[in-house]
Image (cartoon, rainbow, N blue to C red):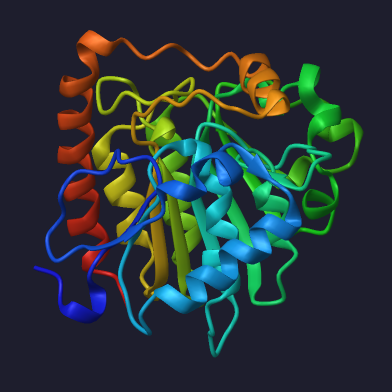
Amino acid sequence: MHSLDQRPVVLDIDRSVGPLPLRLVLPLEHWQESIRFGCSLATMRRFRSMLDELLPQQYGTVFMGSGDFHHLSWPLIERLQTERPMQVVVLDNHPDNMRFPFGVHCGSWVRRVAMLPSVSHVHVLGITSADIGAGHAWENYLTPLKKGKLTYWNIGVDTGWARRLGIADAFRGFDTPEAMVDAFVESQRTQTLPSYLSIDKDAFAPNVAHTNWDQGKLQVDHALAIIDSLRNGLVGSDINGEVSHYRYETWWKRRLSAMDDQPEIDPAMLAEWQAQQHALNLRLLDGIGAHSN
């Protein structure tokens, strides 16, 4: 059971998050068109100011709905007042460190977080996407990789191009999820900083939870082992990847989301998928609750 100062917060933008124990719901559906998928930096500043006004001083895991909102991790991490630097651990099937010319979007926010003075390092775990393969290499922001602020942990992706650019140390490649998790857990044994955890459920295999993005290979036990390895405590956490569908009014959002080949959501399966998602949320909340500062 979560105490009141660790109660989960739902940023209720797309009405996709099921009921959670002691949850605090912030009704934000009026933000959906302006913030979903991507937004200008000015819009993000307004959203951050709104969060500062509405969020209590203490709260637990933040649920933000669809993975189309993953860039909201940036203001959530930026606003944390920590005595020491923190590492940011992201479970995601994508690097979320891709070039985006219009401000920030759900696939570009990691660069912003890696640049924060309060963040010592960002680990993105569970990538199976071709976003970090040679064909999309030019789309990745290279600065955080070159500066040693960001590590990609991938499963089955050929990232040989990184050697040619001298950034191979920023890439950890594995054949199986188990091998990746074991290596990350081992790396955490000497890690002394607290962590912020961000989970996009597209890192999981579809048998665990269906999302509206292409998906990875993680099982629930893999995620719980990663959470357990964060032994210096969690200063914050968020979860996204709920199933929701939205028709954009903005032309460039329609165009870019179509270019990203987002899979169609089967209306006949939606209730079943949402029940599956909800069960996963409860398991992840239990795992996170044991490690929150």
